[in-house]
Image (cartoon, rainbow, N blue to C red; front, side, top):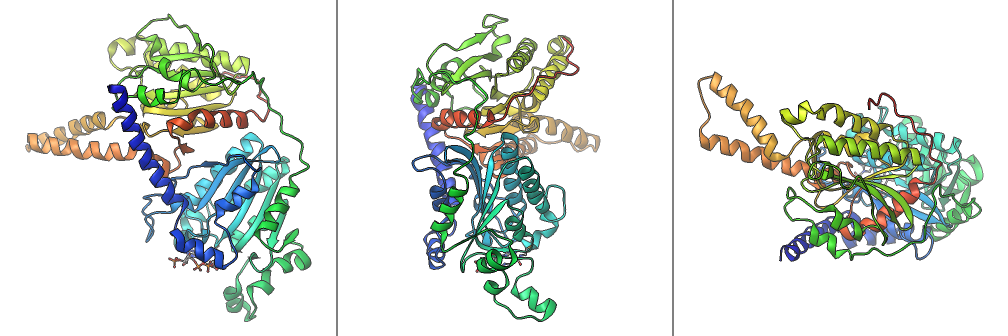
Length: 531
Ligand code: COA
Protein backbone atom coordinates (compact mmCIF):
# COMPACT_ATOMS: atom_id res chain seq x y z
CA UNK A 1 0.00 0.00 0.00
CA UNK A 2 2.73 2.44 1.06
CA UNK A 3 4.70 1.35 -1.99
CA UNK A 4 1.82 2.16 -4.32
CA UNK A 5 1.37 5.56 -2.70
CA UNK A 6 5.08 6.34 -3.01
CA UNK A 7 5.04 5.42 -6.67
CA UNK A 8 2.01 7.58 -7.41
CA UNK A 9 3.59 10.46 -5.49
CA UNK A 10 6.88 10.38 -7.41
CA UNK A 11 5.18 9.94 -10.75
CA UNK A 12 3.14 13.07 -10.04
CA UNK A 13 6.29 14.96 -9.02
CA UNK A 14 8.06 13.88 -12.19
CA UNK A 15 5.07 15.03 -14.24
CA UNK A 16 5.69 18.52 -12.82
CA UNK A 17 9.33 18.20 -13.83
CA UNK A 18 8.32 17.21 -17.36
CA UNK A 19 6.08 20.26 -17.58
CA UNK A 20 8.91 22.57 -16.56
CA UNK A 21 11.28 20.93 -19.02
CA UNK A 22 8.75 21.37 -21.79
CA UNK A 23 8.51 25.09 -21.00
CA UNK A 24 12.31 25.30 -21.06
CA UNK A 25 12.62 23.52 -24.37
CA UNK A 26 9.86 25.35 -26.23
CA UNK A 27 10.20 29.04 -25.43
CA UNK A 28 7.74 31.13 -27.39
CA UNK A 29 5.82 28.05 -28.60
CA UNK A 30 4.73 27.56 -32.22
CA UNK A 31 5.06 31.26 -33.02
CA UNK A 32 8.77 31.25 -32.24
CA UNK A 33 9.32 28.12 -34.35
CA UNK A 34 7.47 29.76 -37.26
CA UNK A 35 9.66 32.85 -36.92
CA UNK A 36 12.78 30.70 -37.09
CA UNK A 37 11.44 28.83 -40.13
CA UNK A 38 10.91 32.12 -41.92
CA UNK A 39 14.62 32.82 -41.49
CA UNK A 40 15.47 29.32 -42.79
CA UNK A 41 16.38 28.10 -39.30
CA UNK A 42 15.51 25.00 -37.31
CA UNK A 43 14.91 25.00 -33.55
CA UNK A 44 18.23 24.41 -31.85
CA UNK A 45 17.54 20.88 -30.58
CA UNK A 46 16.64 19.78 -34.10
CA UNK A 47 20.08 20.93 -35.24
CA UNK A 48 21.71 19.10 -32.36
CA UNK A 49 19.74 15.98 -33.29
CA UNK A 50 21.39 16.09 -36.73
CA UNK A 51 24.82 16.80 -35.29
CA UNK A 52 25.00 13.71 -33.08
CA UNK A 53 25.31 10.20 -34.49
CA UNK A 54 22.02 8.88 -35.90
CA UNK A 55 20.00 6.91 -33.37
CA UNK A 56 22.09 8.08 -30.38
CA UNK A 57 20.93 10.15 -27.42
CA UNK A 58 21.82 13.74 -26.64
CA UNK A 59 22.26 14.04 -22.87
CA UNK A 60 21.00 17.53 -22.18
CA UNK A 61 22.28 19.19 -19.02
CA UNK A 62 20.57 21.66 -16.67
CA UNK A 63 17.36 21.92 -18.67
CA UNK A 64 15.48 23.79 -15.92
CA UNK A 65 18.18 26.45 -15.45
CA UNK A 66 17.02 30.04 -15.38
CA UNK A 67 13.45 29.81 -14.04
CA UNK A 68 12.40 32.35 -11.42
CA UNK A 69 15.65 34.32 -11.51
CA UNK A 70 13.92 37.68 -11.19
CA UNK A 71 16.38 39.65 -13.34
CA UNK A 72 15.45 43.28 -14.07
CA UNK A 73 12.39 43.06 -16.30
CA UNK A 74 12.92 39.33 -16.96
CA UNK A 75 11.56 36.74 -14.52
CA UNK A 76 12.42 33.53 -16.39
CA UNK A 77 15.26 32.71 -18.79
CA UNK A 78 14.00 29.37 -20.16
CA UNK A 79 16.77 26.78 -20.15
CA UNK A 80 19.15 29.61 -19.23
CA UNK A 81 19.01 30.66 -22.90
CA UNK A 82 21.63 28.11 -23.90
CA UNK A 83 21.39 24.38 -24.56
CA UNK A 84 24.32 22.33 -23.27
CA UNK A 85 24.85 18.62 -23.30
CA UNK A 86 26.87 15.63 -24.34
CA UNK A 87 26.38 13.50 -27.41
CA UNK A 88 28.41 11.23 -29.65
CA UNK A 89 29.86 12.48 -32.93
CA UNK A 90 31.50 9.68 -34.94
CA UNK A 91 31.50 7.60 -31.78
CA UNK A 92 33.33 10.21 -29.65
CA UNK A 93 31.64 11.95 -26.72
CA UNK A 94 31.46 15.67 -27.51
CA UNK A 95 30.24 18.71 -25.56
CA UNK A 96 27.67 20.75 -27.46
CA UNK A 97 26.90 24.33 -26.41
CA UNK A 98 24.15 26.00 -28.42
CA UNK A 99 22.46 29.39 -28.01
CA UNK A 100 18.69 29.37 -28.20
CA UNK A 101 17.92 32.55 -30.13
CA UNK A 102 14.26 32.27 -29.09
CA UNK A 103 15.28 33.45 -25.61
CA UNK A 104 16.09 37.18 -25.91
CA UNK A 105 18.15 36.64 -29.07
CA UNK A 106 20.39 34.14 -27.24
CA UNK A 107 21.92 36.90 -25.14
CA UNK A 108 23.91 36.13 -22.02
CA UNK A 109 22.33 36.63 -18.60
CA UNK A 110 24.38 35.65 -15.55
CA UNK A 111 22.73 32.21 -15.58
CA UNK A 112 23.48 31.77 -19.31
CA UNK A 113 27.13 32.39 -18.63
CA UNK A 114 27.18 30.10 -15.62
CA UNK A 115 25.69 27.33 -17.73
CA UNK A 116 28.06 27.90 -20.67
CA UNK A 117 31.08 27.92 -18.34
CA UNK A 118 29.91 24.81 -16.48
CA UNK A 119 29.64 22.93 -19.79
CA UNK A 120 33.15 24.05 -20.75
CA UNK A 121 34.44 22.98 -17.32
CA UNK A 122 33.01 19.49 -17.80
CA UNK A 123 34.52 19.33 -21.30
CA UNK A 124 37.95 20.43 -20.11
CA UNK A 125 37.97 18.04 -17.18
CA UNK A 126 36.90 15.07 -19.29
CA UNK A 127 38.92 15.95 -22.41
CA UNK A 128 35.95 16.44 -24.74
CA UNK A 129 35.92 18.35 -28.01
CA UNK A 130 33.41 21.22 -28.02
CA UNK A 131 31.00 22.25 -30.74
CA UNK A 132 29.41 25.69 -30.32
CA UNK A 133 26.23 26.50 -32.22
CA UNK A 134 26.46 30.26 -32.01
CA UNK A 135 23.45 32.52 -32.41
CA UNK A 136 23.67 35.22 -29.80
CA UNK A 137 23.28 38.95 -29.40
CA UNK A 138 26.14 38.81 -26.88
CA UNK A 139 25.81 40.22 -23.38
CA UNK A 140 22.28 40.98 -22.12
CA UNK A 141 23.07 44.67 -22.07
CA UNK A 142 20.89 45.79 -19.14
CA UNK A 143 23.01 43.49 -16.92
CA UNK A 144 26.44 44.17 -18.40
CA UNK A 145 28.04 44.76 -15.00
CA UNK A 146 26.97 41.24 -13.97
CA UNK A 147 28.18 39.47 -17.09
CA UNK A 148 31.03 41.39 -18.68
CA UNK A 149 34.09 42.25 -16.63
CA UNK A 150 34.67 39.54 -14.02
CA UNK A 151 36.83 36.44 -13.83
CA UNK A 152 33.77 34.23 -14.20
CA UNK A 153 32.16 36.46 -16.83
CA UNK A 154 32.03 36.80 -20.60
CA UNK A 155 35.74 36.72 -21.31
CA UNK A 156 36.07 33.40 -19.49
CA UNK A 157 34.27 31.63 -22.36
CA UNK A 158 37.04 32.62 -24.77
CA UNK A 159 39.81 32.06 -22.24
CA UNK A 160 38.48 28.51 -21.91
CA UNK A 161 38.36 28.02 -25.69
CA UNK A 162 41.98 29.12 -26.03
CA UNK A 163 43.22 26.86 -23.27
CA UNK A 164 41.21 23.85 -24.33
CA UNK A 165 42.35 24.09 -27.94
CA UNK A 166 45.95 24.44 -26.71
CA UNK A 167 45.46 21.16 -24.84
CA UNK A 168 44.21 19.49 -28.01
CA UNK A 169 40.47 19.62 -27.43
CA UNK A 170 38.93 20.87 -30.64
CA UNK A 171 36.80 23.99 -30.44
CA UNK A 172 34.47 24.17 -33.43
CA UNK A 173 31.92 26.90 -34.01
CA UNK A 174 28.92 26.68 -36.27
CA UNK A 175 27.60 30.22 -36.55
CA UNK A 176 23.95 30.29 -37.37
CA UNK A 177 22.96 33.86 -36.58
CA UNK A 178 24.22 37.15 -35.25
CA UNK A 179 27.47 37.07 -33.30
CA UNK A 180 28.11 40.63 -32.35
CA UNK A 181 30.84 42.36 -30.34
CA UNK A 182 32.04 39.96 -27.59
CA UNK A 183 29.88 37.26 -29.18
CA UNK A 184 31.98 37.45 -32.35
CA UNK A 185 34.89 35.84 -30.50
CA UNK A 186 33.01 32.56 -30.39
CA UNK A 187 33.65 32.47 -34.16
CA UNK A 188 37.14 33.95 -34.20
CA UNK A 189 38.52 31.93 -31.25
CA UNK A 190 37.43 28.59 -32.68
CA UNK A 191 39.91 26.11 -34.16
CA UNK A 192 37.61 26.07 -37.18
CA UNK A 193 34.42 28.02 -37.79
CA UNK A 194 31.57 27.40 -40.20
CA UNK A 195 29.39 30.26 -41.46
CA UNK A 196 26.15 30.17 -43.42
CA UNK A 197 25.34 32.40 -46.38
CA UNK A 198 22.89 35.17 -45.49
CA UNK A 199 22.39 33.77 -42.01
CA UNK A 200 25.61 34.08 -40.00
CA UNK A 201 27.18 37.38 -39.11
CA UNK A 202 30.17 38.15 -37.05
CA UNK A 203 31.53 41.58 -36.29
CA UNK A 204 33.03 43.54 -33.44
CA UNK A 205 30.48 46.29 -34.04
CA UNK A 206 27.20 45.87 -35.94
CA UNK A 207 25.98 48.24 -38.69
CA UNK A 208 24.31 50.73 -36.27
CA UNK A 209 27.49 51.06 -34.21
CA UNK A 210 29.65 51.41 -37.33
CA UNK A 211 27.41 54.19 -38.60
CA UNK A 212 27.58 56.01 -35.27
CA UNK A 213 31.34 55.57 -34.92
CA UNK A 214 32.59 56.19 -38.46
CA UNK A 215 29.60 57.30 -40.50
CA UNK A 216 29.99 54.26 -42.78
CA UNK A 217 26.66 52.83 -43.94
CA UNK A 218 26.92 49.11 -44.63
CA UNK A 219 24.73 46.00 -44.52
CA UNK A 220 25.37 43.20 -42.02
CA UNK A 221 26.15 40.81 -44.90
CA UNK A 222 28.79 43.13 -46.38
CA UNK A 223 30.25 43.96 -42.99
CA UNK A 224 30.71 40.47 -41.57
CA UNK A 225 28.68 37.82 -43.37
CA UNK A 226 29.77 34.33 -44.37
CA UNK A 227 31.31 35.44 -47.69
CA UNK A 228 33.30 38.22 -46.02
CA UNK A 229 34.83 35.98 -43.38
CA UNK A 230 35.48 32.89 -45.49
CA UNK A 231 36.72 34.69 -48.63
CA UNK A 232 38.12 38.04 -47.46
CA UNK A 233 39.01 38.30 -43.75
CA UNK A 234 39.87 34.63 -43.17
CA UNK A 235 38.09 34.85 -39.82
CA UNK A 236 36.01 31.75 -40.61
CA UNK A 237 36.97 28.61 -42.46
CA UNK A 238 33.96 27.01 -44.09
CA UNK A 239 31.21 28.56 -46.22
CA UNK A 240 27.89 26.73 -46.23
CA UNK A 241 24.57 27.38 -47.91
CA UNK A 242 22.23 26.36 -45.14
CA UNK A 243 22.05 24.81 -41.69
CA UNK A 244 21.92 21.20 -42.92
CA UNK A 245 25.02 21.77 -44.98
CA UNK A 246 26.76 23.39 -41.99
CA UNK A 247 25.92 20.57 -39.58
CA UNK A 248 27.19 18.02 -42.10
CA UNK A 249 30.44 20.03 -42.42
CA UNK A 250 31.00 20.00 -38.66
CA UNK A 251 30.50 16.24 -38.57
CA UNK A 252 32.94 15.85 -41.43
CA UNK A 253 35.56 17.89 -39.56
CA UNK A 254 35.40 15.47 -36.64
CA UNK A 255 35.25 12.31 -38.74
CA UNK A 256 38.97 11.52 -38.67
CA UNK A 257 39.51 11.97 -34.93
CA UNK A 258 41.13 9.16 -32.98
CA UNK A 259 38.53 7.10 -31.11
CA UNK A 260 38.43 7.97 -27.41
CA UNK A 261 40.06 5.64 -24.88
CA UNK A 262 38.18 4.43 -21.82
CA UNK A 263 40.46 4.33 -18.76
CA UNK A 264 38.61 1.50 -17.06
CA UNK A 265 37.97 -2.15 -17.61
CA UNK A 266 34.44 -2.72 -18.83
CA UNK A 267 32.87 -6.01 -17.79
CA UNK A 268 30.04 -7.56 -19.72
CA UNK A 269 26.90 -5.51 -19.17
CA UNK A 270 23.90 -7.05 -17.42
CA UNK A 271 20.38 -5.77 -16.82
CA UNK A 272 19.53 -4.77 -13.23
CA UNK A 273 18.15 -7.42 -10.92
CA UNK A 274 15.16 -5.25 -10.00
CA UNK A 275 12.84 -3.19 -12.20
CA UNK A 276 13.06 0.59 -12.07
CA UNK A 277 9.60 0.74 -10.42
CA UNK A 278 11.21 -0.52 -7.24
CA UNK A 279 12.99 2.86 -6.89
CA UNK A 280 9.65 4.66 -7.08
CA UNK A 281 8.10 2.25 -4.60
CA UNK A 282 10.94 2.20 -2.09
CA UNK A 283 11.54 5.91 -1.75
CA UNK A 284 9.07 7.33 0.79
CA UNK A 285 7.04 10.34 -0.30
CA UNK A 286 8.09 11.97 2.96
CA UNK A 287 11.60 13.21 2.20
CA UNK A 288 12.69 12.89 5.83
CA UNK A 289 11.51 9.31 6.28
CA UNK A 290 14.26 6.67 6.32
CA UNK A 291 15.10 4.64 3.23
CA UNK A 292 16.50 1.18 2.60
CA UNK A 293 19.25 1.84 0.09
CA UNK A 294 20.02 -1.87 -0.23
CA UNK A 295 16.58 -2.29 -1.83
CA UNK A 296 17.23 0.53 -4.32
CA UNK A 297 20.73 -0.25 -5.57
CA UNK A 298 19.69 -3.45 -7.43
CA UNK A 299 17.49 -1.31 -9.72
CA UNK A 300 20.49 0.85 -10.67
CA UNK A 301 23.36 -1.65 -10.84
CA UNK A 302 24.01 -4.48 -13.25
CA UNK A 303 22.70 -7.75 -11.95
CA UNK A 304 25.24 -9.41 -9.68
CA UNK A 305 26.43 -9.09 -6.16
CA UNK A 306 26.72 -5.72 -4.47
CA UNK A 307 30.07 -6.23 -2.79
CA UNK A 308 29.38 -4.48 0.48
CA UNK A 309 32.32 -3.23 2.54
CA UNK A 310 32.18 -3.75 6.32
CA UNK A 311 28.59 -4.90 6.13
CA UNK A 312 28.46 -6.09 9.71
CA UNK A 313 30.29 -3.13 11.22
CA UNK A 314 28.43 -1.20 13.95
CA UNK A 315 24.94 -2.00 12.67
CA UNK A 316 22.47 0.86 13.12
CA UNK A 317 25.28 3.43 13.29
CA UNK A 318 27.95 2.25 10.87
CA UNK A 319 25.45 1.41 8.15
CA UNK A 320 23.80 4.82 8.00
CA UNK A 321 26.25 4.87 5.13
CA UNK A 322 26.50 1.77 2.96
CA UNK A 323 29.77 1.29 1.05
CA UNK A 324 30.60 -1.22 -1.61
CA UNK A 325 31.27 -1.95 -5.24
CA UNK A 326 28.91 -2.60 -8.11
CA UNK A 327 28.86 -2.33 -11.88
CA UNK A 328 26.85 0.09 -13.97
CA UNK A 329 26.65 -0.96 -17.63
CA UNK A 330 29.78 -3.01 -17.05
CA UNK A 331 31.81 -0.23 -15.39
CA UNK A 332 32.93 -0.94 -11.84
CA UNK A 333 32.14 1.89 -9.41
CA UNK A 334 32.68 2.37 -5.69
CA UNK A 335 29.52 3.37 -3.82
CA UNK A 336 29.13 5.59 -0.75
CA UNK A 337 25.39 5.71 -0.13
CA UNK A 338 23.26 7.10 2.68
CA UNK A 339 20.95 4.61 4.34
CA UNK A 340 17.97 4.80 6.72
CA UNK A 341 17.44 8.44 7.81
CA UNK A 342 21.00 9.07 6.74
CA UNK A 343 22.35 10.82 9.85
CA UNK A 344 26.10 10.23 9.76
CA UNK A 345 27.50 8.70 12.96
CA UNK A 346 31.22 8.49 13.77
CA UNK A 347 31.34 4.85 12.68
CA UNK A 348 29.76 5.63 9.31
CA UNK A 349 32.12 8.56 8.73
CA UNK A 350 35.19 6.44 9.50
CA UNK A 351 34.01 3.61 7.28
CA UNK A 352 33.22 5.96 4.39
CA UNK A 353 36.64 7.62 4.71
CA UNK A 354 38.40 4.26 4.54
CA UNK A 355 36.35 3.28 1.52
CA UNK A 356 37.04 6.51 -0.37
CA UNK A 357 40.77 6.05 0.23
CA UNK A 358 40.63 2.39 -0.88
CA UNK A 359 38.74 3.21 -4.09
CA UNK A 360 41.21 5.98 -4.82
CA UNK A 361 44.16 3.64 -4.40
CA UNK A 362 42.51 1.18 -6.79
CA UNK A 363 41.52 3.96 -9.21
CA UNK A 364 37.86 2.99 -8.98
CA UNK A 365 35.50 5.93 -9.61
CA UNK A 366 33.09 6.86 -6.83
CA UNK A 367 29.34 7.30 -6.72
CA UNK A 368 27.94 9.24 -3.75
CA UNK A 369 24.22 8.67 -3.20
CA UNK A 370 23.17 11.42 -0.86
CA UNK A 371 20.19 11.20 1.50
CA UNK A 372 21.63 12.73 4.63
CA UNK A 373 20.38 15.57 6.84
CA UNK A 374 23.78 15.93 8.51
CA UNK A 375 26.34 14.50 10.92
CA UNK A 376 25.10 13.32 14.33
CA UNK A 377 25.07 16.06 16.99
CA UNK A 378 25.12 15.85 20.81
CA UNK A 379 27.75 15.26 23.48
CA UNK A 380 28.11 11.51 22.89
CA UNK A 381 28.83 12.13 19.22
CA UNK A 382 31.09 15.16 19.79
CA UNK A 383 33.11 13.29 22.42
CA UNK A 384 33.46 10.31 20.10
CA UNK A 385 35.04 12.67 17.56
CA UNK A 386 32.34 13.35 14.98
CA UNK A 387 34.00 16.70 14.19
CA UNK A 388 37.37 15.10 13.53
CA UNK A 389 36.09 12.00 11.70
CA UNK A 390 33.60 14.01 9.66
CA UNK A 391 36.49 16.28 8.68
CA UNK A 392 38.56 13.25 7.67
CA UNK A 393 35.72 12.21 5.38
CA UNK A 394 35.57 15.69 3.86
CA UNK A 395 39.34 15.59 3.39
CA UNK A 396 39.21 12.22 1.67
CA UNK A 397 36.42 13.41 -0.62
CA UNK A 398 38.39 16.55 -1.45
CA UNK A 399 41.61 14.71 -2.25
CA UNK A 400 40.24 11.63 -4.02
CA UNK A 401 41.61 11.91 -7.54
CA UNK A 402 39.19 9.42 -9.09
CA UNK A 403 36.07 10.57 -10.97
CA UNK A 404 33.32 11.31 -8.45
CA UNK A 405 29.62 11.68 -9.14
CA UNK A 406 26.96 12.79 -6.69
CA UNK A 407 23.31 11.72 -6.92
CA UNK A 408 20.91 13.31 -4.43
CA UNK A 409 17.80 11.31 -3.53
CA UNK A 410 16.78 12.97 -0.27
CA UNK A 411 17.89 15.50 2.33
CA UNK A 412 21.23 17.15 1.56
CA UNK A 413 22.01 19.38 4.50
CA UNK A 414 24.89 20.84 6.45
CA UNK A 415 28.30 19.23 6.48
CA UNK A 416 26.79 16.04 5.04
CA UNK A 417 26.65 17.99 1.77
CA UNK A 418 30.45 18.29 2.03
CA UNK A 419 31.22 14.73 3.12
CA UNK A 420 28.96 13.32 0.42
CA UNK A 421 30.66 15.33 -2.34
CA UNK A 422 28.39 18.36 -2.86
CA UNK A 423 29.02 21.02 -5.48
CA UNK A 424 31.93 22.65 -3.65
CA UNK A 425 33.81 19.32 -3.78
CA UNK A 426 33.81 19.45 -7.58
CA UNK A 427 32.11 16.16 -8.47
CA UNK A 428 32.51 15.44 -12.19
CA UNK A 429 28.70 15.41 -12.39
CA UNK A 430 26.02 16.23 -9.84
CA UNK A 431 22.49 14.98 -10.33
CA UNK A 432 19.38 15.73 -8.34
CA UNK A 433 16.03 13.95 -8.32
CA UNK A 434 12.62 15.29 -7.32
CA UNK A 435 13.30 13.99 -3.80
CA UNK A 436 16.45 16.10 -3.35
CA UNK A 437 16.42 18.90 -0.77
CA UNK A 438 19.66 20.89 -0.63
CA UNK A 439 20.01 23.54 2.06
CA UNK A 440 22.21 24.36 5.03
CA UNK A 441 19.71 22.64 7.32
CA UNK A 442 16.12 21.43 7.15
CA UNK A 443 13.38 24.07 7.25
CA UNK A 444 12.25 22.77 10.62
CA UNK A 445 15.72 23.05 12.19
CA UNK A 446 16.37 26.48 10.67
CA UNK A 447 13.00 27.74 11.92
CA UNK A 448 13.81 26.61 15.47
CA UNK A 449 17.31 28.14 15.45
CA UNK A 450 16.09 31.48 14.11
CA UNK A 451 13.08 31.45 16.41
CA UNK A 452 15.27 31.01 19.50
CA UNK A 453 17.33 34.06 18.44
CA UNK A 454 14.21 36.11 17.77
CA UNK A 455 12.68 35.06 21.09
CA UNK A 456 15.81 36.19 22.96
CA UNK A 457 15.78 39.58 21.21
CA UNK A 458 12.12 40.15 21.94
CA UNK A 459 12.46 39.05 25.57
CA UNK A 460 15.36 41.49 26.05
CA UNK A 461 13.03 44.25 24.90
CA UNK A 462 10.38 43.10 27.38
CA UNK A 463 8.13 42.15 24.51
CA UNK A 464 7.99 38.32 24.53
CA UNK A 465 6.57 36.55 21.50
CA UNK A 466 3.05 35.15 21.68
CA UNK A 467 2.40 31.54 20.63
CA UNK A 468 0.66 32.87 17.54
CA UNK A 469 3.67 34.97 16.57
CA UNK A 470 5.98 32.02 17.13
CA UNK A 471 3.90 29.79 14.88
CA UNK A 472 3.73 32.42 12.17
CA UNK A 473 7.53 32.89 12.38
CA UNK A 474 8.09 29.13 12.14
CA UNK A 475 5.77 28.73 9.16
CA UNK A 476 7.39 31.57 7.26
CA UNK A 477 10.90 30.20 7.75
CA UNK A 478 9.88 26.68 6.86
CA UNK A 479 8.21 27.84 3.69
CA UNK A 480 11.32 29.81 2.68
CA UNK A 481 13.65 26.88 3.35
CA UNK A 482 11.44 24.33 1.65
CA UNK A 483 11.28 26.56 -1.41
CA UNK A 484 15.02 27.14 -1.60
CA UNK A 485 15.94 23.49 -0.99
CA UNK A 486 13.63 22.26 -3.78
CA UNK A 487 15.22 20.81 -6.94
CA UNK A 488 13.43 23.42 -9.07
CA UNK A 489 15.11 26.22 -7.13
CA UNK A 490 18.56 24.61 -7.03
CA UNK A 491 18.22 23.39 -10.63
CA UNK A 492 17.36 26.91 -11.80
CA UNK A 493 20.64 28.11 -10.25
CA UNK A 494 22.77 25.29 -11.63
CA UNK A 495 23.42 23.65 -8.28
CA UNK A 496 22.79 20.41 -10.13
CA UNK A 497 23.75 19.33 -13.64
CA UNK A 498 20.30 17.88 -14.22
CA UNK A 499 17.22 16.84 -12.30
CA UNK A 500 16.80 13.18 -13.23
CA UNK A 501 13.70 11.06 -13.18
CA UNK A 502 14.34 7.94 -11.13
CA UNK A 503 13.91 5.96 -14.34
CA UNK A 504 16.81 7.87 -15.93
CA UNK A 505 19.33 7.32 -13.15
CA UNK A 506 21.02 4.20 -14.50
CA UNK A 507 21.41 5.44 -18.06
CA UNK A 508 22.72 8.85 -16.99
CA UNK A 509 25.17 7.42 -14.48
CA UNK A 510 26.51 5.04 -17.13
CA UNK A 511 27.05 7.96 -19.52
CA UNK A 512 28.55 10.19 -16.82
CA UNK A 513 31.04 7.58 -15.57
CA UNK A 514 32.07 6.71 -19.12
CA UNK A 515 32.68 10.37 -19.98
CA UNK A 516 34.54 10.91 -16.69
CA UNK A 517 36.87 8.02 -17.51
CA UNK A 518 38.13 9.35 -20.85
CA UNK A 519 41.27 10.81 -19.29
CA UNK A 520 43.78 8.77 -17.27
CA UNK A 521 43.31 8.78 -13.48
CA UNK A 522 46.26 10.30 -11.59
CA UNK A 523 47.96 8.96 -8.50
CA UNK A 524 46.16 9.34 -5.14
CA UNK A 525 47.40 11.98 -2.72
CA UNK A 526 45.86 12.25 0.73
CA UNK A 527 47.40 15.05 2.73
CA UNK A 528 46.91 15.45 6.45
CA UNK A 529 44.76 12.36 7.08
CA UNK A 530 45.20 11.46 10.74
CA UNK A 531 44.21 7.84 11.19
N1 COA B 1 20.80 42.89 -24.75
C1 COA B 1 19.53 42.88 -24.31
N2 COA B 1 18.48 42.50 -25.07
C2 COA B 1 18.73 42.15 -26.34
C3 COA B 1 20.02 42.19 -26.89
C4 COA B 1 21.07 42.56 -26.03
N3 COA B 1 22.36 42.53 -26.44
N4 COA B 1 19.95 41.78 -28.17
C5 COA B 1 18.67 41.51 -28.42
N5 COA B 1 17.92 41.72 -27.32
C6 COA B 1 16.47 41.49 -27.13
C7 COA B 1 15.61 42.39 -27.98
O1 COA B 1 15.36 43.60 -27.31
C8 COA B 1 14.33 41.55 -28.12
O2 COA B 1 13.61 41.63 -26.90
P1 COA B 1 12.00 41.45 -26.90
O3 COA B 1 11.72 40.07 -27.41
O4 COA B 1 11.63 41.63 -25.47
O5 COA B 1 11.49 42.50 -27.80
C9 COA B 1 14.87 40.14 -28.22
O6 COA B 1 16.18 40.17 -27.62
C10 COA B 1 14.98 39.63 -29.63
O7 COA B 1 15.79 40.54 -30.40
P2 COA B 1 15.52 40.88 -31.95
O8 COA B 1 16.40 42.03 -32.31
O9 COA B 1 14.07 41.00 -32.17
O10 COA B 1 16.03 39.53 -32.64
P3 COA B 1 16.61 39.36 -34.11
O11 COA B 1 16.67 37.88 -34.31
O12 COA B 1 15.85 40.16 -35.09
O13 COA B 1 18.10 39.95 -34.06
C11 COA B 1 20.32 40.27 -33.17
C12 COA B 1 19.09 39.35 -33.27
C13 COA B 1 21.30 39.61 -32.19
C14 COA B 1 21.00 40.34 -34.54
C15 COA B 1 19.90 41.70 -32.73
O14 COA B 1 19.02 41.58 -31.63
C16 COA B 1 21.05 42.57 -32.28
O15 COA B 1 21.77 43.09 -33.11
N6 COA B 1 21.25 42.75 -30.94
C17 COA B 1 22.26 43.60 -30.40
C18 COA B 1 23.59 42.91 -30.42
C19 COA B 1 24.71 43.70 -29.78
O16 COA B 1 25.07 44.75 -30.23
N7 COA B 1 25.28 43.13 -28.71
C20 COA B 1 26.37 43.68 -28.04
C21 COA B 1 26.63 42.77 -26.90
S1 COA B 1 28.30 42.68 -26.39
